[in-house]
Image 1 (cartoon, helix red, strand yellow):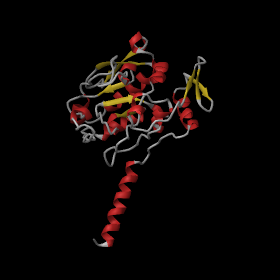
Image 2: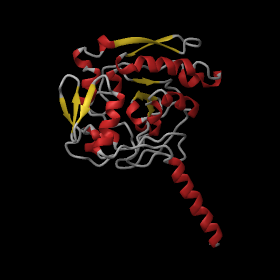
Image 3: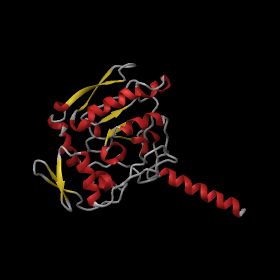
Image 4: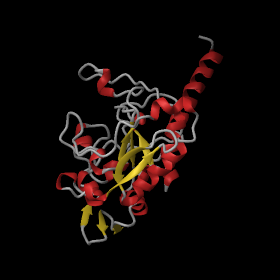
Length: 265
């Protein structure tokens, strides 16, 4: 192969890799992690020492019992508080599909989320739910999400911005497939983000999900996405991450995780 051509190919591949990670932030030290959490959950977290979050009611919660490899079964099933922030969430449009282990925000420490939003199984989440009018000019669908930590307020802002988009985007948004639902994640015993009232699934007809791809045992799911980035960008601007940026993709899914999105902090 001509050396000039080879050089150009390498340069292009490097540029693509750089673009794919552009804007990605992953907090690595416990100090960085606690700082992000204090900033985005300041009504609930009072501070932190070197290894522990200190809640405003005096509760102390370990940041990191034992780090787990991102993408591993243990990382997903029983993540520490720190594990939740160790995988960077990439800002901007994806240049290539997420690689294995790139599931930013998919690991949730259940004790942390119960502390902020409550346990739906005891009815604690339900009493904090309020209505959001989804796309008021085009749909006026009523959705229920939690008011805690500004989730309902931010989702209403998302909705109002999406309402201004061209009608060509309507098929991806109307009707919403749902918000609050006290249920576990398919194939697990972990409470879904929907069970905390912090997630929304947009219209299901034009979305893709890794389980629907039916990958062979041990094989990676083949990435698919039909959701326009114009929609994703609006959600991210208001603190919602997108399941389309996961290796185990769920392109209808958005959840409020401002600690992973510096643009929203």
